[in-house]
Amino acid sequence: MKSRGFTLLEVLVATLIMAVAITGLMAAISTSLRNAARLTDYDRAVLFARQKMDELLIAAKLPKLVPFEGSWDESVTGGFPISWRARVTPFEVPPNSGPGGAFLERIQLEIWWMNQNQRRSFTLEGFRRSALTPDDMAAVGAGP
Image (tube, rainbow, N blue to C red; front, side, top):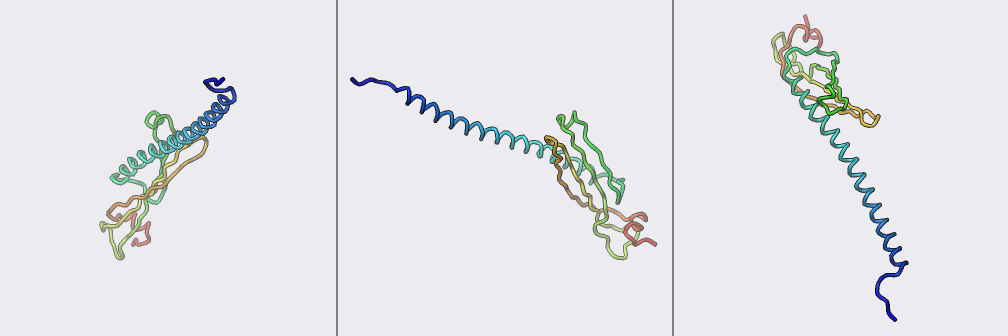
């Protein structure tokens, strides 16, 4: 007599195969979610870095040759501590330049944040045209 249906052994083997497949799928989804969260942190930091670099590029009075720093309020950053440090240095000063002459300044901006007890950071550089002041001349060694 021929019976229709599955034996207990066939059901157990099918269940085992499904369990292995689902476990692999869940591990892949978990890894993808972790990577997406990490990229979201980087994207957030990049947006704040671009905003800060834009502010520094148009700011008229910045301290030169000394680092200065700040941070964003966590209510703005979504609860993540994000800070920055910047430094303005002369990049290209034409020879025989005097006060009022044009030269190129470099703005170095470092952004850092904490991600699961690890400090993450990256650096941006921007350049702007500026006019030489007597202080700039003294700083680059071209003063009177």
